[in-house]
Image 1 (cartoon, rainbow, N blue to C red):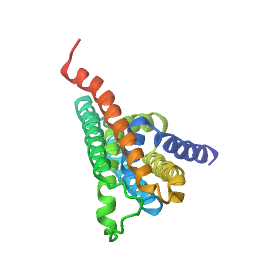
Image 2 (image 1 turned 180 degrees about the horizontal axis):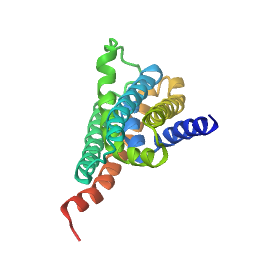
Image 3 (image 1 turned 90 degrees about the vertical axis):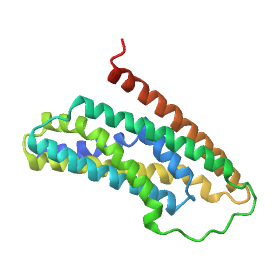
Length: 217
C-alpha cells in the first residue's frame, strides 16, 4: 500500500514538473496571452491539460498494455510536428498582437462559445501528449509491473501536468487582471514576447530532431 501511494505521489509530482518543460510553456504562454486575463486563460490551460492527459493515457496505456515501444521514426516525427506547431503558434501570436488595437478603452466583444475557445489549446495538448507518450511509457514500464498501476501512474501524471499548467496560467495572468487603462498595450507586448519565445523554442526544438531524421553527420 505504501509503495502504491508513493508511486502515485511521484507520478503526480512528475506531471506537475512536466508542465514546466520549455515546449509546453512556450505553447501555452502564447495561447494564454492571447486570451483575456482571468477565467479565459484558465480555460485555455485546462483545455491543454485535458488534451495532453487524454492522449497520454490512451496512447501510453495502449503501448504499455501491448508491451510495445513507439518506433523512433514516429517519435521523431511527432517531436518535429510539435516544433512546427510552436513556430506556427508564435507567428500567429505575433500577427495577432500587432493587429490588436492599443486603445485605452477595452473593446466590448461578445463572448465566444466555450467549445471554440478551448479547441485550439486542446489540440495543442493532444500533440504534446502524442509526442511524450512513447517516453512516458518506457519509464512507466520499467517502474510499474502491473497494467492497473501503470495506467494509474499515467493518469496521475496527466492530472499533475494539467494542475501545474492551470496554476501557472493563474499566477501569470494575475497582474493583468488589475490592469485598467494600459491593459490592451500590456497584453500586446506580452503576447509579442511570448510568441517570439515560442518561435525560438520551436526552431531550437526541431533543429536537432530534423538533423537526426535526415542522418546528417
